Length: 449
Ligand SMILES: NC(=O)c1ccc[n+]([C@@H]2O[C@H](COP(=O)([O-])OP(=O)(O)OC[C@H]3O[C@@H](n4cnc5c(N)ncnc54)[C@H](O)[C@@H]3O)[C@@H](O)[C@H]2O)c1
Image 1: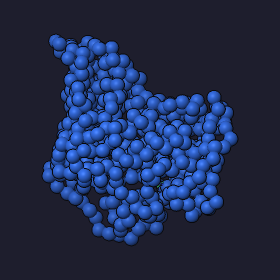
Image 2: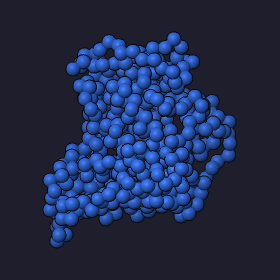
Image 3: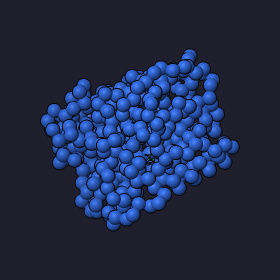
Image 4: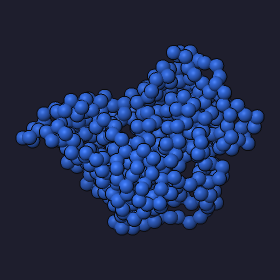
C-alpha cells in the first residue's frame, strides 16, 4: 500500500511560523519499506526511554530530529542519539521548525499534557504522523479536534495508552464478550497511589534558568514568572495536566473501557474530590471518587496519592505472564462485576482473573507490560497505513472520562449531565467553559482544524 503524505506549504520561514494559517497539498507517496524519518518532541524521561529504543528495534524508523526547549536536555538527548545511532540528529528548541521540515514523516510527542494536543494537531496539519503520550488532552475540545485533524489529513495517530496493545487486554475483552461474566453491572477502577504525603508548596519566583526557553516550555499555558514548583508541577496545575486522574487513572479507565467493548460516553458523572487530606498549594485534588452513569451499568474511579499501603503491580509480575498481582492491595486494578462472576484486571501487564461463585478462579489470562508491543504497533501502522491500536477516537473517549471527573470536582463536586453526541454538559455553563479550555495567544488549538 502506498504511503500518502500531505505537505505543508508556506512562504513564511520556520522561525516566524505561528500556530495557524497553514495550507496543505498532497505530495508524493512513499513505499511501504521506505525509511520513516522521526522527530522526538520532548526529550525527558519518557521520550528518551521510548523513541530511541523503538527506532533500534525497528530500523525503518529513523530518529533524525530531537526537540526540547530545555537546552541541557536537548544537548544530552542529541549526544545520546548520536552515540546510539552513529550520526548526530538535528537538535531544535522550537517544534515549529519540525512542522516546517518536509523531511520529517512522523513525530513522537512526549511533552507534558498542556503541549500534547497543540503539538499533535499542528503535526497532523503539517502532514506528519503522530505518536502522542497519554493523557492525550487537557480538555474535551482539543481531544475532539485531534480526532478531526487525524481524519482530515489522513494521519496515523497512536495515543500512548499502551494497554491497548496488551494481548491480555484482548483476551479479557473476548472473555467478557463471550458472555461468561454475565451482564456487566458495575466496573470499579482504582488508581490509589502513594505520593509520599502529597503536600505541594509553591516556591518563590526566580530568574528563568539560562538553559531554558520558558516561553516555549509554557506554550499554551498562561505566561507567568518562573518558579521551580511550576517547572516540576505536572500533576499540580490545571494548566499543565489533569492531576493524578490523568496521570495514571487515565490508563486504568482506558483499559477498563477497552475490555468492556469501548462503550460510548456516559450520560452523567458525579465527581467528588478533596484537597483537605494533606493541605498544600496544589490546584488538583488529593483524592477523588467518581461515578459515571453509562445507562445500563455504572463505572467508578477511586483515585489519588494518599493511600500509602496500596502498591502498583511489582516489576517481577509485569514481566512474567504466569504471575498475578495481589489484587486486594493492588493500586491500579479494575474490578468488573458481572451477574455470573467478578473479573480482576491489572494494569502494567498484571493480567486478569475471574472469581466464580465459590471464590475459586474460573478463568485467567496472564500478561506482560505492553510498551514495546504498542510501539511496534505504531511502526506497523506507519508502514501499512493501518489504524493503530491507540486510535485517536477511542483514546479521546477514555480521556473524556478524566475530564468529566475533574470538571465535576472543579465546579463544586457536582453531578453533571453530559450530551455525548455534542460533548457538552446540559446543566452547567462553567463546566462547558472548562471543557473548552483556554490557550495563550499564539498557541491555540483552532476551531477549524
Ligand atoms: N505511557 C506511559 O506509561 C507513560 C509513562 C511516563 C510518562 N508518560 C507521559 O509522557 C509525558 C512526558 O513525561 P516525562 O516523565 O518524560 O516528563 P519529563 O518532564 O521528563 O519530560 C518532558 C520533556 O518535555 C520537554 N518540553 C517542554 N515543552 C516542550 C516543547 N514546547 N517542545 C518540546 N519539548 C518540550 C521538557 O523540557 C522535558 O524535557 C507525560 O505526558 C507523561 O504523562 C507516559
